[in-house]
Image 1 (cartoon, rainbow, N blue to C red):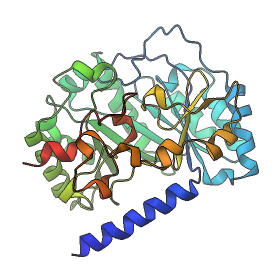
Image 2: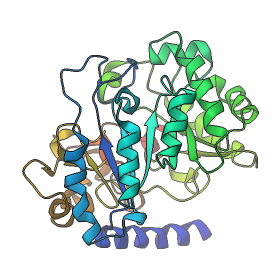
Image 3: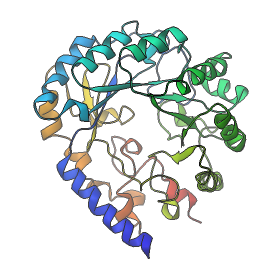
Image 4: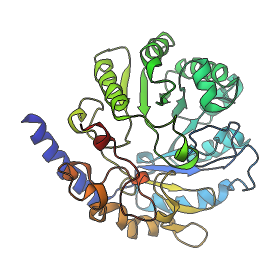
Length: 352
């Protein structure tokens, strides 16, 4: 009964957030280049992309008017890619963002995260970081497509955990190859002094679309949820499930709060070609504008209705779902241009 009341009030909170739609998190897809070729990449990034990196001045020019409406210290710019460390000017980009009052951080695979770049990024005011570790050496390297990837990711972990003022988490893509490693991997992360670990599952998008090793079965999903529930009782590390979707009876047990896809509600992104969207993995058909022809602030304030009012998602497998009021159609990246049904549903997969 307590969970029902909690869910009711949380649903009201989500509706209110969608109505206010205050920007708090902004992704900048600064490059399509990457030093790895991961099996699950949603952007299908390449080591030698034909697409030029976005000039930082173009991005800065687009977002500076945001300061006229929002306090920049209430907004975090998350620099992603591709792999942001492919850019030589990353420390200078971050330093300039900080000079304008924005908080900033990066999402990285850790491959190029050396002691030198670590020092430069901290000196430039980097405050947050997300790094991937997808199992032990064989499974991580299999997923990342490089035999040195695990070694360099672990090197990066040592640097990251030693920085007291850095807010960070480790993310793990759970798949058929590594799901049985999770208990041992948790012990390994604790031994490396990692304090925050976020697990996520793979949606059938990008390179993972037709890769059977990426998708978990219903039983495997249930095992994953049970593992997270058990792990959250360990005070040494904060283990959470990501925002992949609503999980039914596991809600409030696997995260610090219930499921809420904030794409287009509190989260926006500027993609490598100037497109204005929400999370970078969302289907390109949901792009709302482009900084090279539109005002970013105007787009944020006056578009994104398709993400702030999601009643259109009550279709396909969502049409008669008894939990729709709590789920709201799941995460936006699960919908493609057809808009007829989500690509997958964690809750439906787990329900007997």
